[in-house]
Image 1 (cartoon, one colour):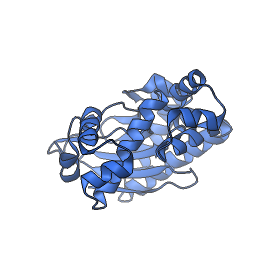
Image 2 (image 1 turned 90 degrees about the vertical axis):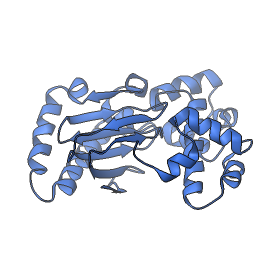
Image 3 (image 1 turned 45 degrees about the horizontal axis):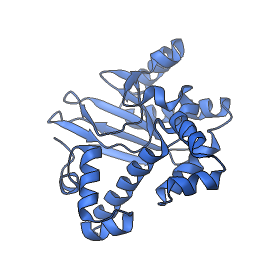
Amino acid sequence: MYRERAAVGIRSAVRWTSVSSGDGSVRVLPDGCLDLLWSSRAGLLVAGPDRTAHLSRSAPGERWIGLRLSPGVGPAVFGVPAEELRDRRVPLAELWGRVAGELAERVEAATAGPGWSAAGATILEEVARARLRAAGGPDPLGARVAARLAAGATVAATAAEVGLGARALHRRSRLLFGYGPKTLARILRMGRALDLARGGAPLAEVAVRAGYADQAHLTRDVRELTGAPPTRLLTRTVD
């Protein structure tokens, strides 16, 4: 069981909850985002930006609450460059120390009742909003770069539009997203393609509209990023 909705007061963030059936590993696709997570088994975690799909295996009945932060926002919330969290799942205590312990106690208490998902997600949102205020908000460059790349702009055109040279954009992108702009562009293009395919567009059409050379290019790129072809991703969520 998986549900998601827009987060309150955090632009483009998503709050999600799930309860594991324990019948396989979930293939979590790379999306350029960082997540603040709570697990009924593992406690509070940070999911860094992945370069390839992460296979997440949960115990039967394990409950999850997540706050997915849009590309470029995570560093302002967690207080570390995104590249330090790349391809990692890190206990929040490693980043926030005692503060994480106090937060864990609040979440544990809030999730003890029947309204556990809403109560826990609200706390995660409150903490993220407070951290963003204390940091003066996310670096606005992150949203600008991610939006241009998501729209299909080239890295060179994006760099020119935000007024940075290629090296400077690469350096800032590693701090904000966890990897360079070319990798982020590939990941965002894949997300755009899969959204089109889920909407019913044939893969050959998806490839053209998403900016791939052809359907074979789409299939190859998706397989490299996720470990599975598009057809499998569109029909299965559990391995």
